Image (cartoon, rainbow, N blue to C red; front, side, top):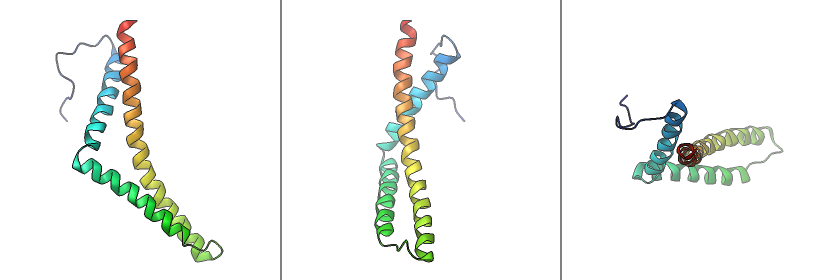
Amino acid sequence: MAKSQPDNIHFIDDRERILFAEAELGEKTIEFLNTPTGKYLRGCALQEIEALRDALEMCNPSSLFGRRKIRRLQERAHAARYVLKWISEAIENGENAYHALKEYRDE
């Protein structure tokens, strides 16, 4: 895999290098979300959650088959939510790293 950090950047230490990498990942995640593919995948996850919510409302929790179906639908919803969670965590971690990086050089 190619190195994403330019060679002309000189880091004070490994902590600064890690903060830079986290900030860069957050920025690249935002860039990805603004691409057609990123918008599509985010939209698919949101639509999946909404469709599963609708399907859950139709289940009968009193029946054995209804409880099984509820469990399967919930597992699928968790998967879609994890994708959105990981995306938002990458962005949030990137923003936190960016602010920490700014303060790190000012110390």
